[in-house]
Image 1 (cartoon, helix red, strand yellow):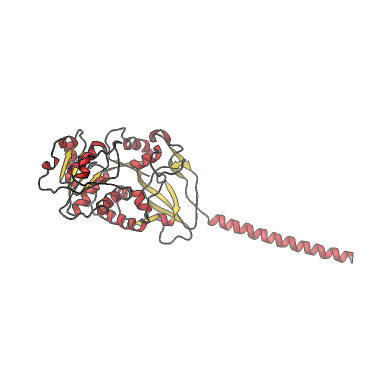
Image 2 (cartoon, one colour):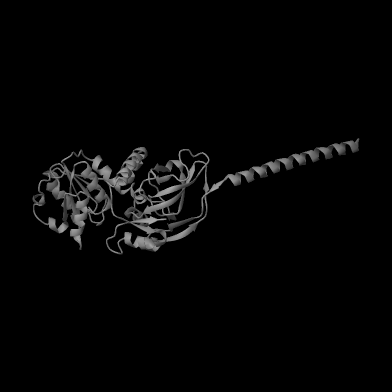
Length: 374
């Protein structure tokens, strides 16, 4: 009996061990299959900053390890991304909304789909995409984000315009449409006319039959700048010193007093915009490049009933505007593709990033928009 019981126990133990080994092999096989099916991004080069400060001091280029592309994610090989003033402000730590450090720089750009997760639909390798709404971390060679963060655009879109369409041109479009009704024959006035927003305002206004009065700062070559802006569709272009007269409106020929003004400079340049506005006009401020406050006379409020408003694209985008934003981006890219919307940019190889940064922060004088090409 004891021998029989021993044989039975041994048989049972052998069977259990065989079962355990079988399950172990199945588990190991499943892990192997899972590992083989996991999609990883390639290693990436990125421009990072580990603390806030002067961008030319705190940014550096590093190598990032591959990351897993999860089932609802898309890995994009970046093609180009601009250096915007807001990018600089984020690095400096003075922008109201900024990523936690350490962080990868950049906020908009364009790329090509490299790989997609198993549950992704509607995007395939080779598709041209932009982050929409824009999001931090575009200054790197490969970016992995959820599918709904990417917007597919036409492959015929000019790369440099696709990289820059979301922040500046969209700001120009929204300001023209969001604050007052502008009809054909009306006019607007703006400072900072040489900025990309300013150039876009000129062209988008022209399409609508709206006249533009443009203010630029005094500098060498201002006559050439005036001609460039007029070639874009500007009706009038004045340097700030030309407006040091009592009645600026007397400088206008057949252009009506503007109903709307745009200010991105502040200080005395903002006051010049206010001087042009008609009774009940509105000035919208979207930047403050001079870092000087806006001063408004009491009479401007009492006797002219002027309104002062502000525009911040990031706040507008956060108000559940993603779908609307994408329609407008497509419209703007269509204009760019047709040559109806253009602005000056300089494409710079990724390896020359710090030279581009020096240009973007003004260390090398007035420069066109710097766009990093990966």
